[in-house]
Amino acid sequence: MSPRTKEQNLAIREERKKLILQTAAKLFLQRGTGMDIRDVAQAAQIGYGTVYHYYNNKTLLLHDVLENGFEQAEAAAAALLADKQYQSPLAQLEHYLTLLPATWREHTSGYIVYKLAADQFNCLDAETRLMYNRRFNDSLYGPLAAVIDNASASGALSPGLKANKTANTLIGSLIGAYGIYIHHDQAAFDAEFTARLLLHGIKESTT
Image 1 (tube, rainbow, N blue to C red):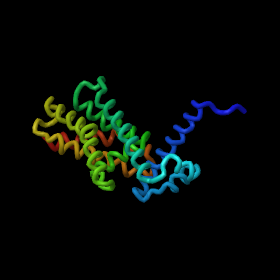
Image 2 (tube, rainbow, N blue to C red; image 1 turned 90 degrees about the vertical axis):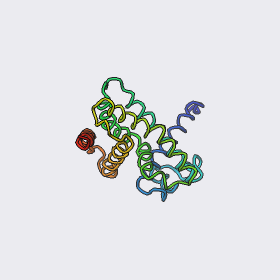
Image 3 (cartoon, rainbow, N blue to C red; image 1 turned 45 degrees about the horizontal axis):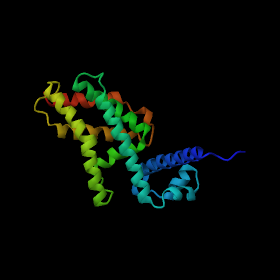
């Protein structure tokens, strides 16, 4: 058997790191900061030494889980809010609320970012908490509030609607509704129903 090439070794390392991060994200949802490197190794069915080779402490592992989560969340949110097939801001908003949970199902770390943001990343140290709060506000919260503002300006929602308050309500409600299913059957979560219900409530409350 011929030895693996440099490219093959690199691909194996990347896949192994991906597995570690995916496993750590799922465990973090179950145990929070009580998650341990040994737990990750056991759940991923790989050696403790292998995980330790990539992450020699839990802080580094959690950092990469959140960095990966932000990358996934930012890419998904940008794509959903920039989709040109939805001409009206209200349709764009419904599109966002319907499809965002699908990105969470695919990338658990993305859901973790939203879940921790709802608590202002209070489980982290002060410096990291400040950094992630700013990043969330700039790249995820702000763009959503802007779409709500546009929907209000277009007349689809009440002109007096407070975009920040509405964004808080939508994000918080979506996180909570999805969270009910996270440890059970994620596929049972009805994103379309949830999106319609949330938007109906907003429209009714502003008429």
